[in-house]
Structures are given as C-alpha cells and as structure tokens.
Length: 489
Image 1 (tube, rainbow, N blue to C red):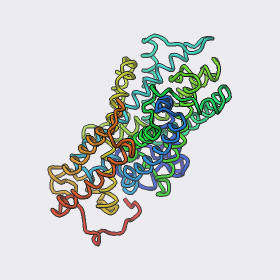
Image 2: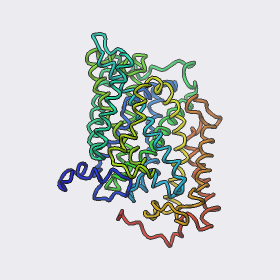
Image 3: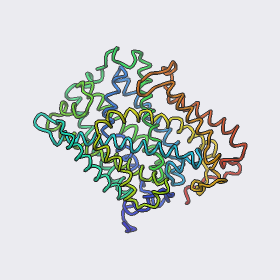
Image 4: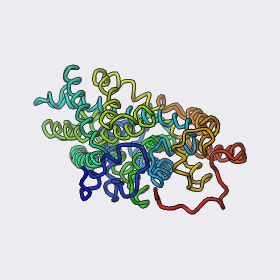
C-alpha cells in the first residue's frame, strides 16, 4: 500500500478512506474508462432488469424504451453537474459540498438522504443477490429453485463478510471491483439479449405490448411521458452518489461524459432493455424465471449465477460511499476505516434475516425517498453555478461554528430547506411514484422537469431577496470573486 510507484488505485487507499479534500494527485479515476465502468456497475445491477420489466407497463414496449433512455440522459447530464461539479473542483464529498447551499447543520438532511439511498439500495440488492444465489446453488435439471430461509441467511451473511473484506481495502479496490463487475454485467446482458432475439425474433419482442386496460395509460403521449419520467427520476436519484465519486476524478473532461454514458446508456438502459424485451417475449418479470427460458436451463443457471456475482460492483461502491459520508458524524471520525465499514454494514446483517420483507417493503419506500433529490438537485445547481459563480471557500465547508460563511441562520439555510420541501410536495402533486397517480399537467411535461425548473427559479429569487442582501451565506459580488483555480488544495 505504501509503494509510491504502485497503481494509484492501490497506493492511495488509506488517504481516500476519509472525507477530507482529495488532492488531484491522489485521485483514482485518471481516465475516461474507469469512471464510466464504475457508473455502469452501479446501474447494471440486477434490479435494473426488474425496472425494464416494469417499463412495458407504460403500454408500448418501444415507447417505454425510447422514453426511458431520453429521461436517463437528461437527468444524468443535470445531476452530474448539480451533484458533482463542486465536489470535483474542491475534492469534497456530497455532504460537505451541500453545506454551501444548505448550511453546516442543514446538510444533515443531505447526510440522511445519502445514507438512506446508498444503504437502502445496497441492502435491497443484497437481499436480491442472497435469494438468487440460493436458487442457483439449489439448481437441478429443472433450473434454479428456491431454497430455505436458513440457506438465504447463510449466503447473506457470507456476502456481508465479503463486502467488508473488499470495502475495507479502500477506494482502489472499489474501482477495481466495479470495473470487472461492469464488464461482466455487460457481457451477460449482451448474451441474454442475443438469446432473447434468437428465440423470439426482433419484431415480436418490440411490438408485444400490454393490453390497453393493463397499461398505465391508453394515451400514447402519456405513455412516453411516463417512460421519460422514470428515466429522469432514476438519474436524479444518483445525486447522493455524485459527490463521493466526482471527488475522485482527476480531469474535468471526465466529469459528465463517463457518468452519462456509463450510468444512463451502458448501465441502466442496456440492462433495462434486455429485461423489457425478455418480459415481452416470456411474460415473466423476474430474471431468475425468464433467464432459463431464453438461455436454457444449464446455460441460464450459469449466466444467472455470474450476474449475481457481478452485483458486487454496485454493492461495494454503495457501501464505500456510505462509509465516507457517515464520517460527517464526529464519533465515526475517531474510528479506524475497517471499523467504520463494519458499523455501516450492521443493518445488512439484519437484512439477511428478513430478505423477503426488505424486497416487499423497502423498494416501495425508496421510491418516495428519491423524490427529495429532485428539488435538492435544483438548489445545489443554482447555488453553485448561478449564485456563487462556481466559487466557494473550501476551508469554510469544515468550519461548523456560528459566524462562519456557510452558517446562515443557526447553521441552516431555511430558504433552501423550504424550497426542497415545496419541490417535494409539488412533485408528489404532479406524480406519485408508487401508485402512479398523475396530475392534470403530467401529460405535457412530466413531474421532475417542471419541478426542477420552478424550484430553481424560486430558490434564485428568494435568495436574491432574502439572503444575499443581508450579507450572510458567503455570497460575494461578482467582481470580488477570483477566477476559478483548478483544484489547488
């Protein structure tokens, strides 16, 4: 680990285990490909096949896929800047970056969101992987079959131990595991896509739609809007991940392109497309059910098993980001990195004993949790790019005392909090992501895009009227702001 000539992903692991600013020389994403593959690993996990299976419910398989891709690209392009630009420039994690807009104490809401999102999805994926692995281990000539709960618990605990062993090695191992996992997931997906098209034909799977009474809406425009909305919301839900990954990027040219291509195109879209076409052909939604049907029993079982192993890329990344962010809590800063990771994984032990309950309830709750990041992404974008002209004082992000620049009122920027709360209410008025209930104007613009636009305007106007004239929050006249300097910490 101490060898200065080693691969940077290995040589700097200990330095990247905390939340202090990361110097350019210590950043592990030195090229386009490694950053792209890390995002691909997050998006290409098994749950994306289920998302694809749900896409055909919009009414048209083709519209569902086209709209989903559009939404993914739009959302990921925006969130890469809103959640990643400040973190990239100053080498700080998501929560520290949010302090400039939310306040030193207001950022607690972002910390809670980061932990819930990263650990929530990690534990959902852990439950899916444990149950799927037991099916593969018990596979016979008829294909994967469900095992006992005790077997699921044993496999789940073993996965938690593996996660601890990998994440405790630091960011370099996260990047390596994600790279191999992403490549493996894409190979498996392409094999499955070929098997689906060979067995059912391109025309059949593309024109197989649900009946009008089963579709979310019989109206074609609304069907497309549903699909775009799913894609935008999926991408905006990546806000908690962006800062923790962007702080590890060395070149500004790699901030947006790899995240959009890796997450939106190669990860989320490709995997969802395979899931959608397979469901259209077989009528099954669970990959464990349709993979043996399209790839044969033995070949399908092998592919399913490899897919589950490749979930480690997303799991390791999610746990790593959670372990870095949880060090915002002072007690965790005194603990060794291995202990921090172990504490973060404690909820996962309980998940292994309740995997069915997690899959039945937690995914539904996480659908609402992601709504918070729609308004928050607008606030972070406007605050950094428009109001602060891309300039903050890095040292002040760590100055949690009254009178400091980002203290606002009692450590909270109540204007930002009010805008995020209002944006959440407005979004839910337009669209309920669980029941799929939509408001009157959803057909024309969806919910996320108008919410981002309105909350951005509201935040800008309220800050100009209520905060900046009072001289609080560290906002400076444009002629007093020095030209941005490329990350010299």
